[in-house]
Structures are given as structure tokens and as C-alpha cells.
Amino acid sequence: MTKSTSKDSSPKAKSDPKIQHLEQALVAWHKTLPSASRGGSNPHFRSSYSTLEEVIAVAETATEFGITFTQLTDFQVVEGGVIEYVRTWIMHESGERLEARTLIKAKDKSNPQQMGSGITYAKRYGLQAALGIPSEDDDANAATKPKVEEVVEFGNKATNNDGGW
Image 1: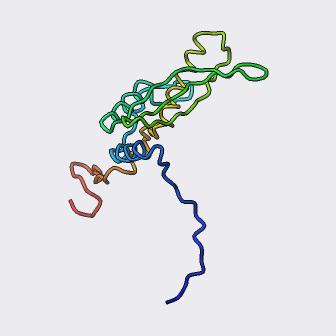
Image 2 (image 1 turned 120 degrees about the horizontal axis):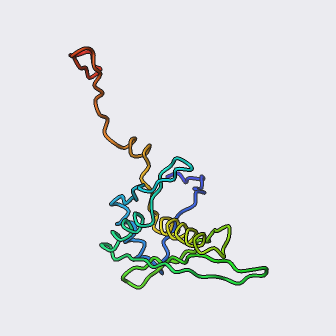
Image 3 (image 1 turned 90 degrees about the vertical axis):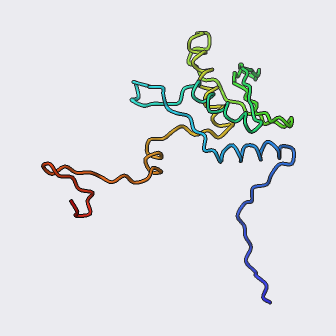
């Protein structure tokens, strides 16, 4: 019998016994491959994004696994000012929970519309990050779809590119 001298120095993920039921439920939920559709449109950047409503709709599917969430705005007084953020709690029916904070960004925090936009942004990305919800990605979706035979028109005939007609 030989003894191995090589050591595996790769980091190992350890389960936190304080949230083991929540972790197991999240793993089970993630096996359903939840993702948020991208129904929002940003004409300035010519891009699409997942709206808060779309992210919430996906997050609500986790209730089948005993998982729910709540989000509140909060602040912290620090030297030189106030920091506003959205606090996201991911809760399991066992009583276990995780908490995350997402900074609220707004150019003019005295402008209610800019603050509202910053809060919505923080809620959307805070919830996506806390639950690990990806947005649908056109490239990723295309890469995972089964290959469809390409049909090329030549006059009145079509081919599947294998040389047959």
C-alpha cells in the first residue's frame, strides 16, 4: 500500500449547519433551473433586462420548496452621511434565513423619482443575487437548445446540408 504525498489544496465548500434546511431547499429549487425572462427594454443601451416583477415571479416559485423572501429599505448613519440600502431576507419554513444588503444608487437622493428608480434597481439585483436567479440569456439559451436542422432554399428544393434532397 502506497501513501499519497500530494495534498488537495482546493477550497471545499462547507455547509453551514445553521441554515442546512435552507441550503437543501435552495439546491432542490435550483434543480428546476429558475431564470427570469428579460421583458424590460433599455433603449439608451439597446438592451433588455429582467424587470422587478419578472424576478419576483421567479422568486415566488421557490415557495414550493418552503422558501420565501421579503425586502425592506434601510439606512445606516456613517461619518459624513447616510448610506441607504435594500435589505433582502431569504427565509425557509424551518425558520432559517439569509440576509443581504444592496446599496441604493441615485444621483439626487432628494429626488423621489430617482430614489424610486434606485430602490427598484437594488431590489431587483439584490433578490437575483440572494437567490441566485439568472436572467435569461439569449446566447446561453441558444447554446443549450437542441440543434435544429438548417433548411436552405435552392429553387423549389430544400436540403438539410447532408447532401440529400
